[in-house]
Every structure is written in C-alpha cells, then in structure tokens.
Length: 119
Length: 108
Image (cartoon, rainbow over all chains, first blue to last red; front, side, top):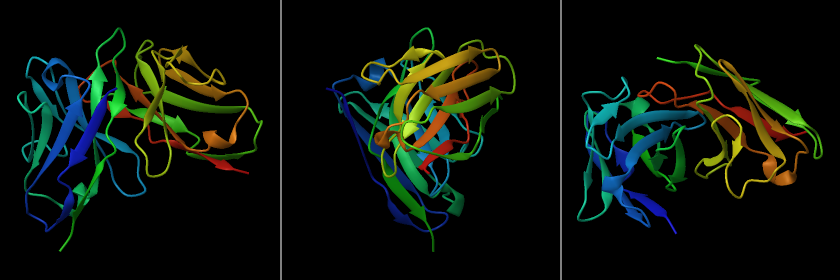
C-alpha cells in the first residue's frame, strides 16, 4: 500500500522560511515523478513544483526563485524548501505522485500539511 | 500555458439526478485530461484519466468524454457520497500542470 505523509507545516511570519517533508512508503520517491500541489483556503488546486525521476525540477511562476523541491533517496522523502514566504502562500500543501503513462496523472496523494503565513 | 475552464462553478442536484460538468482547454489537448474528486478536508482522488478511462475502484456511475478542447464528466445517478468538488487537469503540455477552477456539487 502506498502512503505519502506530509509534515513541516505551521504558522510562519511573512518573509520566513519553512521546509515541508513528504515521507513515502510503498513507492520509491527517486524512481517517480513527485510533485507538490497546494490549495489556499476555500480555493482550488494549484500546482507548485515537480521533480522528475531523472532529477529535473520545475516550478510554478508564483513560487519560482523562492521554493526548492528536492528528495533524499536514503530517507525516501520528498522536500519543499519555502523561502521568502508571503501571505498568498497560505495553503494546504499536498505531495503527490505524478504517474507516467500514456496520459500522466496524479494517482497517490498525501493528506496535506497546512502552511499559514501571517504576522 | 494551457488554461482550463470549468463550468458551472457550482450546481445543486438531488440524489438520483444525472449531472454533467464541463471542462474547456484554451488549446487542443487531445485526450490528455484527468478528473479528480475532492471532499472537504480530504486530498483529491483520481476518478478519470485520459479523458474517459475509469480509475480502478471508481463506480461506473462516473464517466468522462471529450477530446481536443471540450470535455465532460458525467455522473449518471448522483449518490449521497458524490457530493464533492470536481477538478479537471491537463497533462498535455507540462510543466506547468494546470487544473480547472473546480465545480462544487451540492445537495438540492
């Protein structure tokens, strides 16, 4: 059974930094395309970042230059380093596997971790 | 970037109703379209991939159709557990991966 468990969320002041973790079991993070998707309170889903199995990384324009996605193979864990946080980054952050098939899709999701950026 | 537009943004329906949700892409995406269901406080769940393929374990009351720019998600007979928000997502030109704005299905 695949499980993705996020942690690291919390209340942080504007301009601060936070690192989110997503511990995986039942799948190998480094062998998969892994992504972060966020959802602001009462809003829709917004893709944030993705890391390919080969190591390439991509970001939404809204977080480019401030967020960094990475992984640790020894811990089978995905990370999202978030710097220069803004109020508009307040959201539940989900990690998800982006399954590679004829048509790619998100098939496994974590339960999410809430990040609140406020003074 | 490809923009995804869903309509309606919300709808009210009764148990047993047939419900149709539309998703339109800003350019042709062939059948590179997925649908997700999200219940309050929960992570999204994959329902349909490649426009019309039913994910394992999803009831056959759900179906998807379309190609190019216009897609539909149909619930043939709405059940109490189907009241949720539904999102489409394109995987034709990525990154960025883009979602539609969502359609909230509420009880009438």
